[in-house]
Length: 222
Image (cartoon, rainbow, N blue to C red):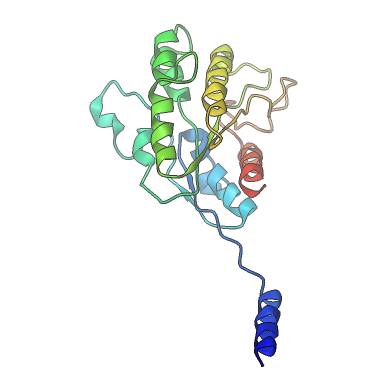
């Protein structure tokens, strides 16, 4: 009798595959993440379709870390305020580009860059904030920024500074297996292909947002 019960339990287990756990994903950051939301094709919306489950999107156009006027750091404009506790399995985020572009024009930005992240990737606003996110148990995917397609762009001068920030972010991620740095500098080649960019040659097009999301989805679903 007991062997029949055991056989029945085994049969039920084999015939009813366990339901895969759905990862809880939060997206934060600036316009790289938020753009194309009106078309249903922001990075978060595209990521949701690619991983097959809802994704919470708290990103905001113009978001940054530092503000000269205190009142501007409200309503999600401060990237750190976009984190709502969770629990989250993954926090996908970017940030720092607006601080470099609007804070110092991507020119003499050494002080601003060091405030964001030190040369060795260990100190600064970004590593400190990412450490707080990791303390909640979430894995962090931090993305870089697109580069221009070799055409005149308002952010053409930001390339070298972006490369240095990417180097520092990669160092930060190398010290913690729960952090993935995902550069976007190689997503667009400098051959004049503007299909990954919007008309302003700064923000991603729908195609660009979907391509960014595809890279993130590959990490989450692997």
